[in-house]
Image (cartoon, rainbow, N blue to C red; front, side, top):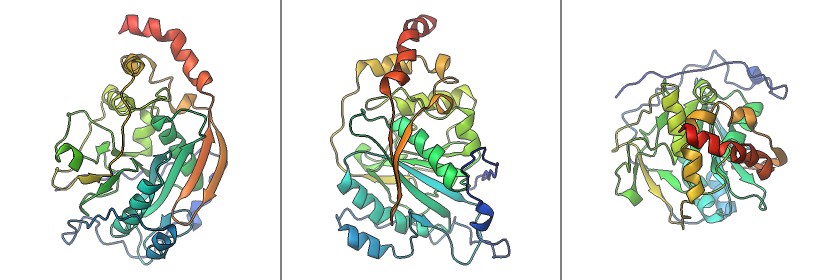
Length: 312
């Protein structure tokens, strides 16, 4: 199993970007061992709910903000893990108990970001992923972004948390779905994109103030830019899902999804407006709390929806 890795070290235009030249491992460090190791294999997932104190103790080598990098070798893989979040503390505890240990075995330089909307604003997974991308990029020169639901835990160390020359859908085989891919264009759950790939499609849509639809919208964006979704084999890209209650898909979501082709260049990173209420570098992750004006985001689409649907 081989694939070409894409390393992007483009300069950020953000004025708030840190000088990462002092933050990456020195170039005279030896290269890290290939993360695609024959010794990697099944990862022992635990669903035990531990206290925050115990989880922190288990991850004593994780730096403040949920950061970790190899101590004695140099890696080109600078990975931001972006987790959209709301009212899932038990899930978050299980997620962090497993994921930090899993990631440290892969010799990558990573940071973990938990992004949350103010409680008065309806949940919007895609918008939070956009925020996570933008805010994490201000803090470090990440070249790979993994968009990760909090209820999914990887089961195999060969499932590499790095980016490739095409966008990669990572959660291919989930226990809830009997370890089978529900449909070929699925891009939800866990996915990996380079900075170039993500910006090429203008990020995610900001319109999905509900459950569902945003991952299929992203799959359409990728197809429109001739970017192919790649996957590891299902015996590697295995995940356990933490049980939870899902909302029903609202009818208006389908109207939004039908118009991706006509609005994706205007709806995404370049149209996102948000206010950061809090940004805290906690022991196990960087927590980002934001708010947005839902009306300001949704109204332009509402006014143009009829025109878009007629074109469709």
